[in-house]
Length: 161
View 1 (cartoon, one colour):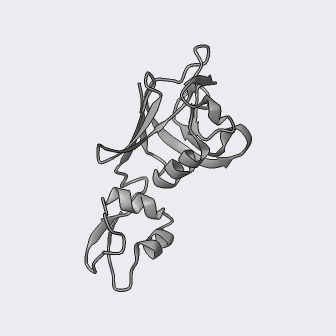
View 2 (cartoon, helix red, strand yellow; view 1 turned 120 degrees about the vertical axis):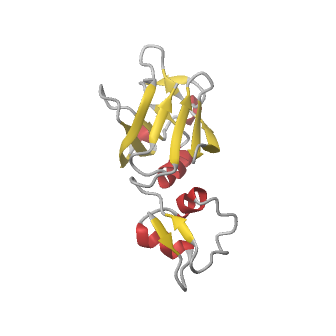
């Protein structure tokens, strides 16, 4: 959604009003200084309909890339599926987001894989990051999974290759 800055707006109160993280708005709009917004300026509030974000998981390198408008914003090390339970390659979308405990490290983003439940999530086994260790999911350090979870909306495309 495109929003026009009004008098007395701050990015903080805009993010609260629309239920979107401040970081998501900053990244989506390439904002250098969040304290320097001007009345009348138009910004993108990322949501399922207007989503500049995408994710790429490079299995060979065990890296997850976060992109905004096709430009890499950051990347994270990940664990991927074991040889016996590989991470499914293909083009997917995040269909659900939720807080899952235990081995999922708190944050779970389910993928649209039609056969089974696969997702991107945190882990209670951080020593597995960088390895082929999961049952097919993409594991992240839990604090990084929380960060990614706060940035990307449902519907975000995920390319795994």
